[in-house]
Length: 157
Image (cartoon, rainbow, N blue to C red):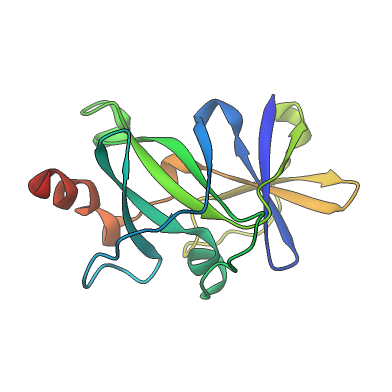
């Protein structure tokens, strides 16, 4: 399997490349008033509004550093109960140092032994020449505090 790797602080994370639609340079994003702090805002992507989440803010409580390697990773996010109701929507993810891919088999990722109810999107880990890399489960990225995010955008479209 192919994974897109990004880094937040000293930690490396992997997103299943099958979920990735496109990787964009960091562009201007319009803030959404009173949105959760990890919601960076919205940008117009291929003619339609797309919400954007800052992974650094979500994972470490700080905004992503603005650098050449900071990208917007456009992913297919499942909407509706188990993704069945509405299929998928595009979601932008601001990711630092998102310039590398790795190939790993699913069995290479093992349970870390740590359960984190505050970050259910963090999955298994795999050894890497640079340390460990942890999978991010896109389907579990947004929580109930984000449940109206796509609805808000549809209301204003």
